[in-house]
Length: 108
Image 1 (cartoon, rainbow, N blue to C red):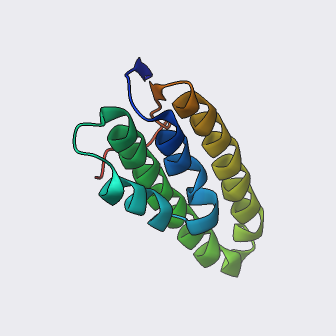
Image 2 (cartoon, helix red, strand yellow):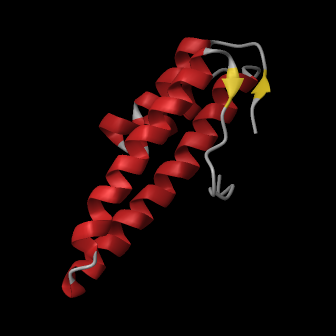
């Protein structure tokens, strides 16, 4: 679901792209530093944080499944999905939209 909301598009995009470097710590830092009245940044940071939690769970599951060799296929797949969806989310956030990742529950 994408909603057009006014706000700091650079910080909103940074909330997504920072996850490529700092996993869930990047979006968490942006969420903490964001102004209370900036809905665009807050929602994008929350969505990015939720997605990165799910990606971390995916990496843990693929690590466990490496015992039966399935994890060796799953691990790069999770990484590629993470990269592609983060790039899409960054572009959408830079356009001023609140991007919700597919199949990601609202944990935060």
